[in-house]
Amino acid sequence: MTVGRPQHLPFTGDGSRLRMGLRPLREEDWLEIDEDLDLFVAHKQRMLSERPADVVAVVADSDGSVHSASVELLECLAGHLVRWHSSTHVPAGDGIAVGSRGDVVPVTPSALAAAGLHPIDAAGRLTQEDWTIQVRRPDGWILAAASVCCPTRWVLAEKLGRPMADVHRPVAGYTEQLESAVDRFFDRITPEEPRWRLNWNLTDSTDLYQPGGKYRDEPDAGLTADVVADRVWLRVERQTLRRLPRSGAVVFGIRIHSDPLGVLADRPDVLARLAATIRSLPPGTLSHKSMGAFAPAVLSWIDGTVAGRQPGNR
Image (tube, rainbow, N blue to C red; front, side, top):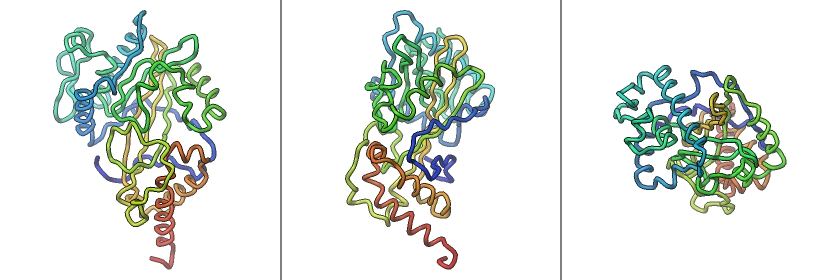
């Protein structure tokens, strides 16, 4: 991916508690389309060709409600892209041509049927975002359909059809700190008030597809402070949530940003917040984020970099 200034810096200096951190989302800001669009499109096409069952999934849908919600999402995306991103998404017959490659993604029911695509699959092909659709069932909101080609340490097959509590249960502290708030939010969000939030991790890979890697508790012997700047990546998820007006389903968009920590070397204020956040993470969160593998070297590098930027040390 293109390396530059990180667009999102979600750490506050306090990682001791989980927070939803929801913010109002303007319609024109729903999607983030940038110079890496073609890279994401190519990655998704490769994943959908090589391992489709790992990246697209839909629950049993006897009444067709999940399919209807997926159609509604696709319609919303198509209209939004043509209005707000017309330089990269151009109407082409029964589809939309995406990026400089101009690959046409079908968006009408007849075109989808001819291509043999589920609408959630087509939705994922249109954008850099991955998508999940949540629907209300007697046991709560469940993950009912998804196109996820860029997961960060989770496996779609393990989450499909599960209530939100089960989807998030591996996250340390979720049950005590967020479960009831998330359930209330899903019940109350309106189509007129979409929201967005950020999540972050540190990784040692630039791969967009990273389903594994949780619970690495032992320090990586090959990861030392002198290589952190180039070998550890800040991976941020920009997550959007909105209710679809017809179906009432809640749509979750996940947009990945990834930058080497070295691009923050001239931002001692940001690095200091990151270090404070890491140091305040509870043990369960440290393990879930695999900070045991990264934290010693990362903190050593940050401390040295911040000290070197202090007046009198430059």
